[in-house]
Length: 249
Length: 203
Image (tube, rainbow over the protein chains, first blue to last red):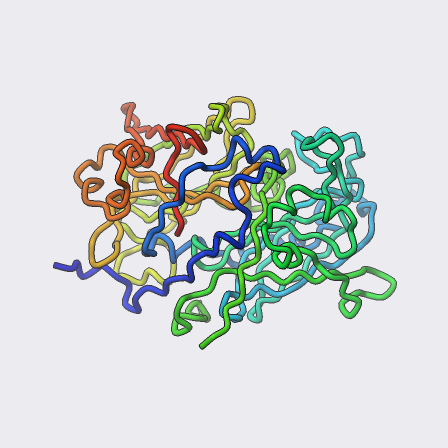
């Protein structure tokens, strides 16, 4: 007999399956660390339940007023060195609908390519006015924006002379734990993108292109900051009946 | 018919994920509040437990730069989410969401929470109590989903629809944490690769 508390009143709004051929494979030997950290067994596919279609949700009380401004949110009496930029875009789902109230967290190196992290020992200088950490929530139309400085390229121990292209790390929550995603945004025109073993883990050139933010002169602020546009797509529901269900919550 | 847009491709979280997701651990003064620090606050009901373990790579070395997220139901089996609108309370102080990073030297992680209740599964069946986990680290190209079940829930585990999908008993046991200690501690090591590889899930 079914338990009366067995399903939510409105039923389950399952999500589209993840296309694993579109994402990087676990084992990508050009990126050496993946060799000992990649799973060898296939994933076990599950029917989605409440465990997968729910997830943590966040509100404005979870973030601070300067969290979306990396130029000001770590200042110790001054502003960071570097090229002032705006990074903005929209978060939509697989059905093209905006994802409202999505928490975006970003982190990045400073203009010299140095992270403010106890484990980063690169010889480029720490910037006393740059932390490199930001957060924001998407608006009703899925839009978001950060103000920051353009990060620098930096060397990393993969091959003998490996350099990461300038990038910003992005972490995204939708409304469901199964939508959780971490990725990296690159900058249009950077010659290191095509040379990067981590970019090359993405199997499809079209997928790689999706991670490169074009310069967006229309969003630049004259005499202040250039802008780059990075649109993000999270998994959508299988049935559009369930779209926008969280509106008003 | 709607046109489907492809998901943005994943990239590794890299070694400095803490700056963004656990800034206090990275050595930054955390901007208030740091998210995921309390899964079940003082007013949360249920049995208080601790979970500890390590994430190990294919060479048996601890993955010290991993970040694990936890998503769980409360003791009544209710998720703190508007789509779980069953008539069950979510008590104040229960978020159900946690973030944990291991000690950078030893790779041992530990977190405190309450033991969740059973939650609904497919076809009207019940799922055994479990924690939903998501792991990211340098060298992991796409975040890994898995679950932790409770070793002292033998009857519920025996009929759990997800554990029931796993043919190999050894592999099934990779999702079950053994209980020890008088203040209950569940030990849960996650093996990324090799003979003891943990079952990872396509959710």
